[in-house]
Length: 361
Image (cartoon, rainbow, N blue to C red):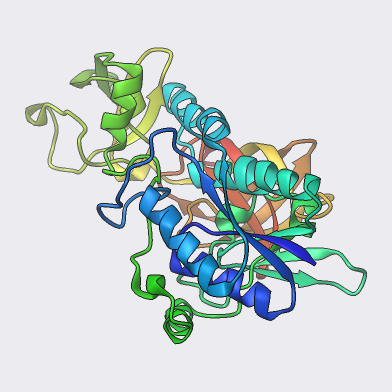
C-alpha cells in the first residue's frame, strides 16, 4: 500500500512511520504546518508544530530513507479548529480541539488529500488499535497501553475515515516505543510529549481567549439564592466544574468549596454552587458520528466524557445525528461542548458533542 505517515516531529509518529515501512508499505512522510506564524523552537512540552518539530520529522524521514514533505494546512486549521474553539467558548460551551482536529484536519483534510494524490491510507502515532473483521470492516479499539490510550480523541472518525487509517502503535506501551526509538537511533527518542492545547503554547487558555474576544465584565451568581457573589471579565473564561479563579467575594459564602455549575453566554453570567449540584447521570449529544453502523434501539455502552476520564456504564439510544445516554452513576463537571465517546468493551461505537445534561430520576 502507498501510505502517508503523518510526522509531527515526536517519537510516536517517528516509530509509526518506521513500522509502516517495516511492514512493506511504500511510505511518504508528511509534516502538517498548522500555524501561520510557527515558533522557531519549542520552549517546553507544551504546544507543537514549531519549525524545530518540522526539522525533527525531516531528520527521521532521512534516516528511514523516505520522501518527506510539509503540507500547509494552517488556514484550514485556523478555520476548523481555532475559530471553532473560540466560537464554542463564546457560546458558553467547552470544546475539545483535539477531537475537532482529528475529525477536520488529520482524517478529513489530510486523508482526503492523500487519497486524491493516489495514496491508500494515512498512518499516525496515535495510541489506538484497528481490528479488521472477517467481513473486511474495520473497528476502532482501545490501545493496549490504557495510560496512553487515545481512542477517545479518535471517536469522531466515521467508517470511511477508519477504512483509511493505520495506528501502528496501539499494541505497544509508551516505554517500549521510546526503547524502540532508541534502538533505531532516532534523535527524538527522549523528546518530551506535547500536551494541553497545541495552539496555546503557554497554557493560558483564558488569556488567549481574552485576546480574541475582549473583556466583557459580568456577574457571578449563587445557584441557590441567585444573588451576585462576585464578578468576572468574560463568561467564556469558565467551564462547568471549574473551582479556581471564580472571582468570589468570600465574605458572602460559607466555608464549602464552590464550583461553576452553569455558564450563560447570552446573559454573560457564571453560576456557582456546591459540589452536590455538579452530579449528572443523563446527557443528550448532537453531531453524532459512528465508527460503524449507528446503534439501533437501546444499547448498553460505556461512556467516557474526558480524554483521560473514567468509563461509566450506561444505556444509549440514537436518533438521527443525536444520541441520549443514561448513566448508572453520576458524573461531576460534565460541560456542554465536551464530547461523549461510547464503547462496547474496548471497541469504539461512536461519539457525540454534549448539548445538555441533567439529573434523571
